[in-house]
Amino acid sequence: MCTLEQRGRVFVLTLTGDGEHRLGHPLIASIRSALASVAATAAQANGAGPGAALVTVAEGRFFSNGLDIGWAGTSRARLGELVAALRPVAADLLALPMPTVAAVTGHASAGGFLLALCHDYRVMRADRGVLYMSEVDIGLPLPPYFMALLRAKITAAHALRDVVLRGRKLRAPEAKEMGIVDVVCPGAPETAAEALRLAEELAARKWDGAVYASIRISMFPDACRSVGIVEESDEEKARNFASKL
Amino acid sequence: MDTGSMCSVERRGRVHLITITGAGEHRLGLPLISALRSAVAAVRASPGAGALVLAAEGKYFSNGFDQAWARTVPRHLQASMSEGFRGLVADLLALPMPTVAAVTGHAAAAGCALALAHDTVVMRGSRGFLYMSEVDAGIKIVDYFAEVLRQKVPDAATRRDMLLAGGKMTAAEAVRRGVVDAAADGGVEDVVAAAVAAAEGLAARKWDGEVVAEIRKAMWPAVWGKVKDYGAEAAAARPRL
Image 1 (cartoon, chains in turn yellow, green):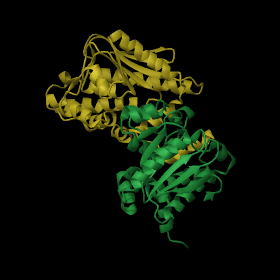
Image 2 (tube, rainbow over the protein chains, first blue to last red):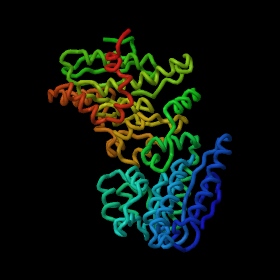
Image 3 (cartoon, rainbow over the protein chains, first blue to last red):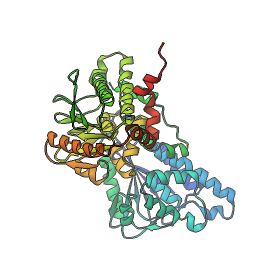
Image 4 (cartoon, each protein chain N blue to C red):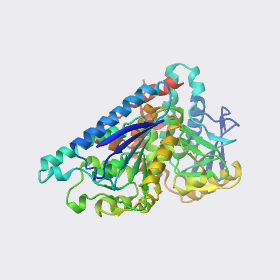
């Protein structure tokens, strides 16, 4: 389902196998477990100082084709369960105490696109694969936290409209023009390598993980609130400033 | 007018120019913040004042809060520094005339936020950068700073590069990415002249100052909401015992 390894300062979370990496209960649980492990390892090491970063990458033709609607079938309840189950994954990523890079090595649609958006940076292959918010085409409204994240991360008005209201399928170069993807690479191996390189570069800045996460959350408090993250108060942040004097 | 040698105020036509003086980093400790607030209050009270320009001498516009100063004073005065800065931002947002920041040198952290809290930002083209240094310094960002950035830098990727990557942004990049309005060639005096010219153009519109202030506050509702209680207007409105 997914594996976690550490390469130097970089944690690499890999969605394994040639399938669609559909986000059903098993894969979601697996990802949550991996992210918890990353956060815990980082918390231990933070005292010692080294910076860290996360790369999420996938094998095969898909990054992730979204929630496991096959498992949900016609059951509204099941679909609701999956939507609810993905929410804490988004929260885990948005609160992760280190920079995060999504290596979009294949198609990322709906929940899969959202997963990529929950990362700080996106590196994507140019040769194949699209980013696609498929809900309007399928006839499903977007869950509130999906929309909150899309609004936080896709800030050009025409870009957001194209993605959610027109179900536009974005190849990497156009996604980059719209500010959704940061780096475009020729193919999957280059994408993974560049994501790793970028993560190494970010980890080498040795940012304090808790401060990094705090600043990330302060950048989009509404989206963070929508996935259940409670932002610190200014008093708590001020205490942090006083302690740095 | 010379408010305690930390900043000077002069008049150029309809434009009132406040200059942070001296060759140093213009760190925003309580002394400089108070001097700036006095200067802004003086401009506000000047009859016929049409626009404000804030500039600085030397290599720095401002390198942020004065942590060295804060280390030497009791805890309650440290709080006064950040409260005073909220008040300065409130006073700028409530100022009944257009405001222009002449970013004549490096503007970091609170210094960057100060520049961005103006209606128009003109930046020196040849040197100096905008730098939200907090992530590098290990300092968290309070909500109204984040709101100033959100207001002035709506593009998510640009805001991320500034806040989460500690990017040092040159004038050319700042103009390209829409963070500042214009870059000005030359030295400090040339940047000031360009900012004053821009301010003169705005003053020439002869807008009702009170209306300018009301529209600006309504345009920045999130920031205004978080700073208004610290401003001079709020202080004046509080009942005195």
